[in-house]
Length: 306
Image (spheres, rainbow, N blue to C red):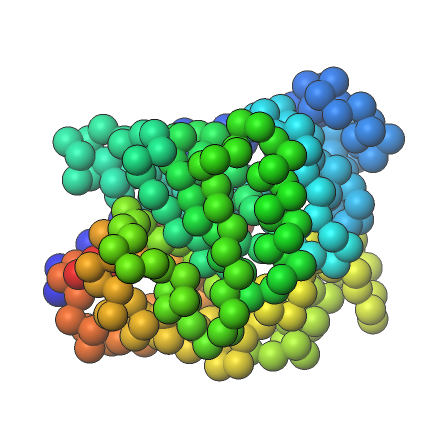
């Protein structure tokens, strides 16, 4: 198994060079695009415009403005308490996947709807298919085990003409499977992507959310609203992130001929050893690990190919 690992200016804590969200948010332009954002923007003690990132409504409104301004998405709504993703980090994942495809294409990123991607757990927000399609013109199949999330993601696609015809949302009826029941006979994908649940239990997810809000507010709260939201299946999985990815690797073996690259985000560095061990058992031909940085947060994606 060939293994490649890449670090990307982590000391500088910068996003991917093609990421549209490098630097400070342009609130003047965002407010012009979405006037409803104006009342939620304020100047902090450093004289910089910002929002209250502990306020779920402010985070959602910022996302709507970012999607409208940078990706020409005019209609984007998610249900209460569903995951409202931080868009800069999500965009990074897409851009690094583009680099993986470019490595096999003479350094040129393949674009257009002939590039077909599978997003495991697309959620009600449909964020990865939106960014991948709007940046590179790729076509997507998004999946989820939550019927309401599927319905809302379908609504986002249908209400934005520039997404219609290139993004399909499918319900995964068996929560134990990733590809089975989704990938059709003779269907081919260039890559899959997934942002796994980080936590092993609802209690662990709640504790982490509380720590996050306390850090954002500088206060010791005993009960926290999830500023980025999230339903149980979005935040936790029995056995945690490691077991989720191991299960995905094991199932990917049966779909080796259906996809060129399987990929997943990995939030916890200590899980890499177990993931590599499982990839060796699966006898994949090559793996790639790419580290990504956003502010003080470092994450990584692992890709494998048969």
